[in-house]
Image: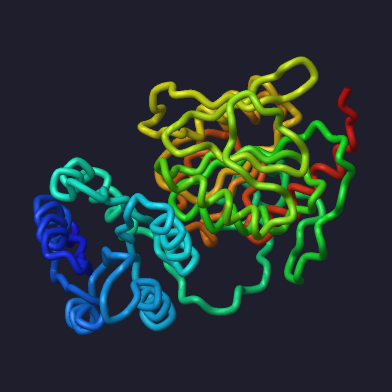
Length: 384
């Protein structure tokens, strides 16, 4: 049996510390090796116990949780699962924590904490397991761009074989120097960029959207996120990006220069109304245990958009969206997966590649440019 995942719990609530310790120690593959009521006490425990994962409360005495997280990721990068409250302020703080390098978060209830955390036990331990396998990085200057990898060889850690047929790569992708600004296109395009992500996806999505010009094609996004957080996520992106970003609303027209994020706790898909694409937001059941589900969005994109879709699978655990991305690919969409080196978790891209639904695998920093090059190469198609 492999060594158990060592977890340190940092929370100012004695009740929460006790509950999380109990939840963790009930699992056969993990153990709580220490608890702390504040970051100052946590520092000594972390030095002594060398945990694999830390659960960290957002709001604590003596030192702000975000300040502690920033120092931790700079000096001793360790996978962190944030424990956040279901409030607007809690959502904003959690998004900032993800920017600073936290792997994921658990949204604890404001009332009924004991029963609420017990109900979330499966979710908590799953996120700890994912965090234990995540790639966490010291917060330093970003590395130089990396040569793109064909989908056929991405799973084996090598480059495309010489001679014979190979999987296609993005034409004109950067190969060692910083990429120039993405090409700009006119507003009258039928292309739609379709993005799916989970663990680590909030930062990956932000990086891509911030690179898109204001007249980029419409973007539809499913990021695994609970209710109460997607509105803050969309507002944060809207303040940073040249395109407009908002939660998707049922029945609204999907327009170029806009990005639409699946609301937490809802399913999001694309439909056609005459010559227009429209958003469908409903309360249909979870798919692959997720709501919103990438599978739901991508399957609708395969059916409605066909070759007008550009599919992008970003970092995340599991296989949600892999089968539907193959459907998009078979329907004529151009499909991109984030490479393992730049993923927090390589699960969803890996499964999409294995399913045969990926045209090219790229580092995160090259995806926005590859999208716009593909759009420019396909030409401008006018809508009525």
